[in-house]
Length: 67
Image (spheres, rainbow, N blue to C red):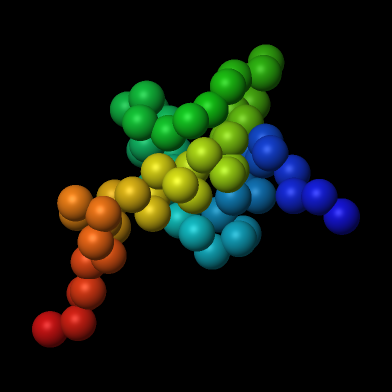
C-alpha cells in the first residue's frame, strides 16, 4: 500500500512525528506544508518529514543531541 501524501493534523500527530499542538502552531505560523480544504487543514506528510529532518541538520551533517 502506498503512503498517503495529505493527512489531517490529528493523523500526523498519531504517527508520533510531532505533537498535535506543535503542528497546529506551525500551521498557524504558516511554517508547515499544508492546504486548507473547507475547515480542515491537510498536511503534506512527506514534505513535513523532510522539513523536520532538515531542521536537525546543519551544513548537511546530522546534529547529535547527546550531551
